[in-house]
Length: 116
Image (cartoon, rainbow, N blue to C red; front, side):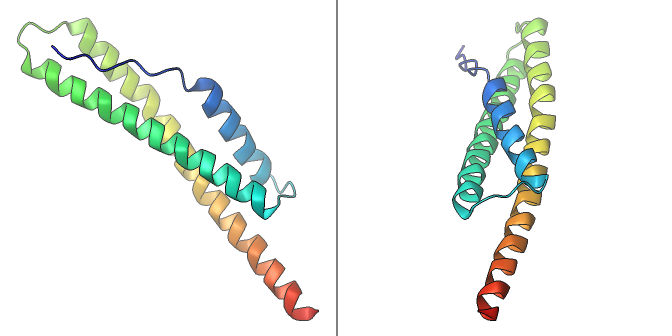
């Protein structure tokens, strides 16, 4: 029976990225470099969360195929997926909001360039 490695806790990373996203979305001034940096970090967090969910789903498929699989292992994987999905949805939503904010900032910058 192949085991998928347990993820290193993404909580500190999740907290740091989500905090930065919220700061920028609260209309704190942000440079283009900051916008790109936090977008890259958020994209990385999304990839991490997706990979963790997919690993748990594969593990659940394996466990379902094994007649002697442990119910506690199934419950652990289900719990893990249920904890990760809201985090993924939150980060994706914040990234969408960040992309909208970045478009507004770039549009304003371009408009001001045209006035000069």
